[in-house]
Length: 435
Image 1 (cartoon, rainbow, N blue to C red):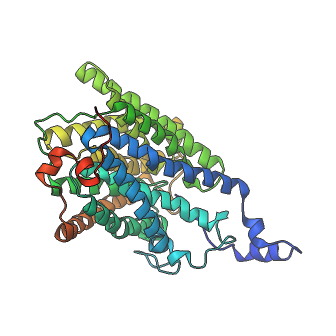
Image 2 (tube, rainbow, N blue to C red):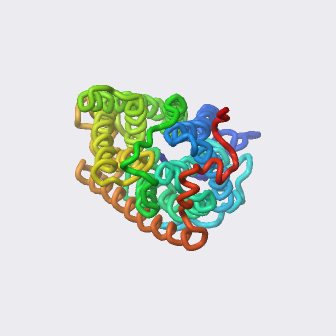
């Protein structure tokens, strides 16, 4: 996501002020850019509610479907208010290389006329808020069907402020990774690595669901899951295309490569399943789609269609292998495969952004390396630093937060609650009225 300057450059400002009766803010505001980012903001929120909620809800057992939907809705509310109160300021305030400042707490100083580049700053803040909503919601997949609702609320709130906000500042808010030249157009490190690593750590700390891996725990409603997956695919155009923060060729290319990678992810995952198990599954197809989307995310503003095709194929193959390894070899109950799909996909895509952004790869060329970086090796080094730093920080911080929450509220529901289901015990409701 390219950074947007908040202040109009002085020479332009003086030129605008020299025109009688012309307001500088009116001249700087671009209606097309604003309209596109408004639309993209709605698309990204649509990814969480109802997209991710339905996608995750269909994947769990029927006795826990409402708990997952409730968690997504609650996280949307908590994250939005925390982002307003201090999250946005700490992520995008001037600050230093590690964290922003508190100059924009409760959007102090942000009004109707305040701009961030060519769009209202209030819109930039809202667009970023939708990212802050979906990232902790993704983590839900790692602990689905076994965490207390109170613990989930507290953990998600703390995690947003302690993990997501600082990493956002490092990459997009003027922090040290962005200054190094890290390529992360729409959230390979900020969203997918943080969510994936947090989900893995949470799954390890909580332990597996009762009966895992001996007892089969298939999705209870694949129709719901596919519906949510379709919403994610469409919403991702706003996620990646909107990160251009302008209605221009960069946004259009980001949308195109996003679609290409998703399509390649679907077909690659399905082909591997077909060859290995004799039949391609619907679950595999939608998981391959998410893998393709997550993996192209950091590279979407820097690569061309050829690079996106390769990235999508790699996403389907690598994330499939990672999912099998995590579940069947390590027997880790990352319930909804957040780490092997989002975490591994985010790492792979961040590294591939350093390869396919090169301008010397023929039909697989992209749009060049970051300013001051002249070789693929240099760009890859920066990308690797970003992957390692974000993964390690997220792992350690998540572990500490889980220990704190466990001491305050306890993390996991009791055995009887897990057996009966979180819907009826924690919310006194059922997802389906069975007579």
